[in-house]
Image (cartoon, rainbow over all chains, first blue to last red; front, side, top):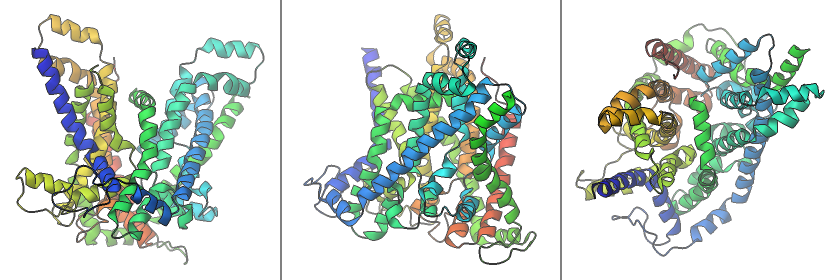
Length: 271
Length: 285
């Protein structure tokens, strides 16, 4: 009996805390689904009144939501592809080869973790301008392709592959590139998936950098477009809420279905 | 030959790191001492930009606010550790609770701004709940009151950060060997004693790393400011980096912005070094 009560109390506490975490999402959803009444009326409603999808339709009618969605998708897919390609290529020699300067390179990569990178975009914008990459997706993607965290996670993954496999391939006369491409990459596939999903969500959510590089609204990703929405519909909060729901739906779905990859990424980061 | 192969593998990543991670720091630090602009010749101006920002009310407020932001760190860390302890079990449905706590982390900051704008609205849900519980008499202007707005922003940062650190602590908790706990139970240690005598010492490295990350994140906070208040009301919610962002992007005063970010960088590196010196993270046994 005592344990049942304890478990019950545990669940109650968890539920109360979870409520605080997800309440803003719930409220936004209710706002987006309701069509009746003033949104900021006292007392507010915590359940959709006359639920309908009218606000969602309004978002699609007034804003190029499909274009925003496509832009976000393009940015996310390209960032994931190039990050996996370049970071795994960089992580492999760091994990499995002896060469001059290895320690130095590793130290430099670690240093980027400490350097304050939050406002790098101020100078990166000059660089992107000089490279004539303003208003291009390459400009949005390029600075986010190589990150220290991805290299570190993948380096760790390569280190776990047994040396025998590599030796056997060398005896068979495989080149370093073949070993990397045909043997190592398939073996670390779960880690590539982890880094890929974390990157996809990050790229999808990126908001300041794309808003700097892109000046034309039809090139905006959703994360930037949704704020644009706030400017367009000064009064129609419900439509803004609907746009908000549409923006976060893909990341929420991705997270809920691949939760274990997120947890594993963190697990690797702690080590 | 071996060397060459290794460098060929590394080259593309290193080039991008050099251009987009090291160059901004090096070139940016240099530009902070000039009057750089895209349309004129550049001149060396010494400490002029620094003199300007330190006499600028917005930047000075920003620096102070960035220090106030540090108050958040213990709340985030203790909160996240407590959450991790609460979800570190096999109760049915526990993964849904873990997910609920983590969801704010995967939400883009622009959406966070819009949602909490709704919450903090004078006729919004937060005021309603507070008035229902008789905690306040009249609706509070969370984002329009210049002595409250900063704390409202800090609360949102806390809400966004908890889940991330929770997962870090959860991973560390699951690495605590079960036999240590069992041995302690046999010796008659209470739950509380086991937490303080076994779990906390085992978590020490994680607690230190998370606290340092949290201190740095607090000093560097500015995105939440941008989406919630844009520095207002009456410039009361400027932070050090928000000033850099505001000057650099909205007013196109790049050297000033870079001077501000230079000051913040020195701050961050100094604090990181101090933390590392006094709280040496020992490797896990």
